[in-house]
Amino acid sequence: MNVVFLDRDGVINAYPGDAGYVKSWKEFKFIPGSIEGIRKLNGKGFKIFVVSNQSGVSKGIYTRKSLDEMTQKMLRELKKKRAHIDGVYYCTHASADNCECKKPKLGLLNKAVSENGIKCKLSFFIGDSFIDMSAARQFGAKGVLVLSGKEKIANRSKWGFEPDYIFDNLLIASHYLCAQAQEGSL
Image 1: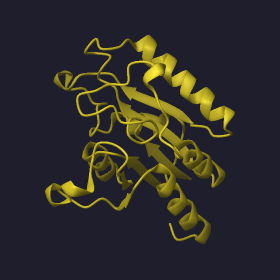
Image 2: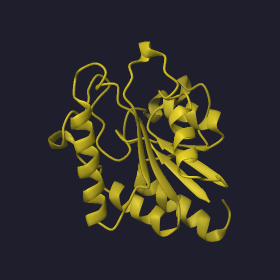
Image 3: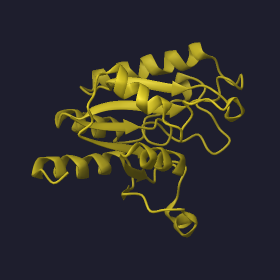
Image 4: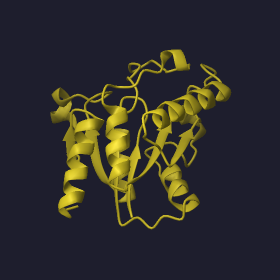
């Protein structure tokens, strides 16, 4: 089974900036094409899981209830557009908590796989930061960096390693992964 892990902010919805947080549904804005990208991946049989650090909860910037409301509304909007996500996993801890679930640690990825009884034949992690790319590498997933959020191509000389793939956004990444799946070259 092929699996795609998605970061949320900067991949599915607009990146709030380095010091910013998406605190409510009113602030949640889908990146153009992200819903279509998820729908394309669904159509090729990929299992899709959101794996996202949301430390604003532990910092008191927004509540777990607000986060859950945003998630439910996001899932409803996706469903209206004939797209779906198989599971959503958040780490709400601050870095100082030193938990096992905050990316780049693998707690959330392992939880998604074990709770869903998945045997990953091949997995991809689509993210907008090197935290995501580090998690992908440690997990054994192909790292797919999208430039629709935190990371910029201008920083390439500072990257510690090269991601497996780089695309402008989730939609373009999904077109590529789906075409490769069609050809059987993944």
